Image (cartoon, rainbow, N blue to C red):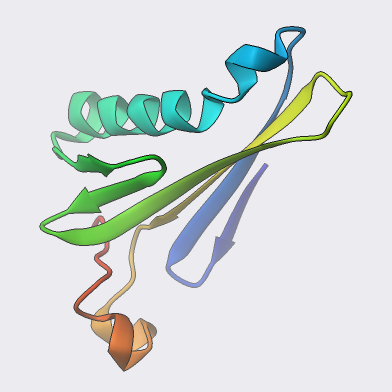
Length: 102
C-alpha cells in the first residue's frame, strides 16, 4: 500500500514470518534496504540515525517502523518519506530538522 498526502509518501508492507526473533530487527533491515535503494536507484547517499531514521544533509528524510503483535507471526513495516515537500509545507519549527528528497 502506498499513500500520497500532499508532498509526503507513506507505505506499508505486510509480512508473514515464523521467526519472531528476526522480526525485532525488521525496522533496521528495512531502513538499511531503503538507504541502499536511494543510493543505487537515485544516487542519494543518506545516513542512518539508528534505529529507524534516514537523514540527508543533517535533516530527517524518512522514518521506518516495524510492528508485530504478541503471539502472531505477522509484521507490518511502515515507511514514511518526504519526497516533494518544501519549507512552506512543513511547520516552521521543523524546517531545520526535516528535508525532502526532491
